[in-house]
Image (cartoon, rainbow, N blue to C red; front, top):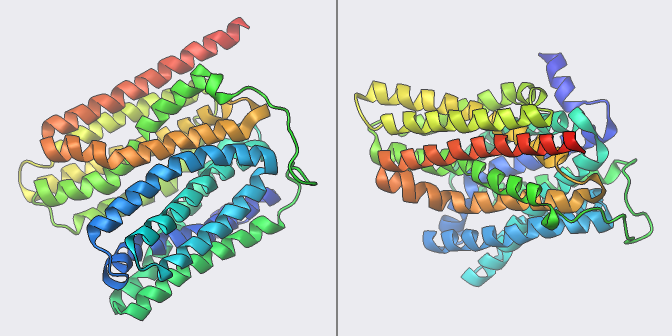
Length: 407
């Protein structure tokens, strides 16, 4: 056990080690923020739920452009510098939530916080792409995802203290903690060295190919955007489904989310090792699409039968969903790296993360207008969407592999 923990938290490579510890602190911040932010906005800051919902939706739309722009900034200034700057910026934005008093100010701060979070993801992916090669890139990303999940869970546990106290000072302290943890996460990034980046100000790098002229990469990004809707299905769709369409107890929801966290934490690295080539990545995404279709069928079945049967169906659906998640992510990471032009890594990773931002933005709308509004028919539509997307990804990969063999 101790050896396994050291392997995750103390990798030999200095870049991987810095990213690991930065991820620990940043993910602790996320865990606290996810748990207390909405209640802080409504109970302490005094905003209505509608204001919060619209504000975060606008911020999500702004994050789409921010994710794309971060790729070009990383190309000019270096991925580490961009990651460091937006991490500090997001930490300050989270602290600014304590000062907002009007809806317009809330929207501005939310755009700054969510937009810089999207920029962090792009800069991180670019930094991995430029610092590692081949299988190492995907494995490093998989390990960081495990660290992220575990740290978010730990942050949620920390937030439980503030929720239990339930006073205004407790909520304020929790929000300050989210900001402080993000600022702490910038420290390891500031000390890492040995990464290729401009050292005397912005410089022109070898341009490489534009991702906007790379039809294969754009199609792969669109397919990835669809697959990322699975996260919204789990975090938005499943809670609404359990509460509105089944007789399962509400405590089932956190139990299902905990089950998902455990499965992802235990198996993500292994899945990444099995999806580190174009062929294996395509198969992984296709398998993920099939498993998501199965999960949709099981979620739909949970609306019928006795309570015990509902809970069993929800549990089996979450297991299938979790395996699909780790396969889709492992395959998606490999495709994002292997299909990109290494001479223009920042721009390519920016496009890829933009796809993720679009998928995340649309997921609540898509899931609620299908499964939550139409029940079994809606789940069938989602199942077909994920299945077709997975198979289309596999076909795209096979076509691209064939073209490479012909060259």
